[in-house]
Image (cartoon, rainbow, N blue to C red; front, side, top):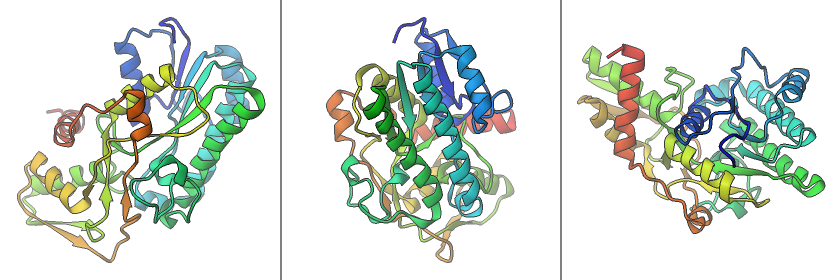
Length: 311
């Protein structure tokens, strides 16, 4: 990918798109095409067609998506399937029509079955039922990756799909209800520390196991794959290690300096029991993550404090 290539980062204001944009700029790529959702609604087919006709991107990182945690997925299932299907369908089809050289579609580890063998290999896709709480989102992402494979097969395009594990880092969504587990816990424990609260309640039993990848490591992997990967097979992006939500909460409490009790409420859903990716395919290509969890959490907390509290 040449330094003067026209590169479109769909979703550049989000957690993933922001990290990819930072990485490209740091590496000397200057012809970046950036549009926020106010300037370009990717759900609008006509608007996306006009955008491609005007800009003619050479490469695309498709990181735009409607995302959220268990509460958001449960509350807005229609928006999660509709918005994601529209976004990816419009972008992928226009990429084909306008001869985009390469497109990276970013999915999610939630595409794998709820009771998937661990660690989850790429070959386990569609071998079991999905987790009900995020089924609409997962089905949209599965449709996107199969769309990439179908266009490759029929039209000879170079569109490929990568499945990241759970992500965190600067630029994350710290909304008290719509956010994923790390920013949600970080915000609640920080606020509990400020309020001197003796305890904090966390949804579920605390027993599910999750894997977490620092978002700037994901950006590094995405650039690596765009330059070195050209296969119709999906590929996982992760760290290959996990921990329980109870253990995660304890580490975040240490990060923010909260010393009260953390209690778990089993009346709320746990979600998938375990989600650990098999990342051997990516490791064999020569890429591995660099940021340990504690270090990544510390950098994320520093960004959170600086951004939301001007400290």
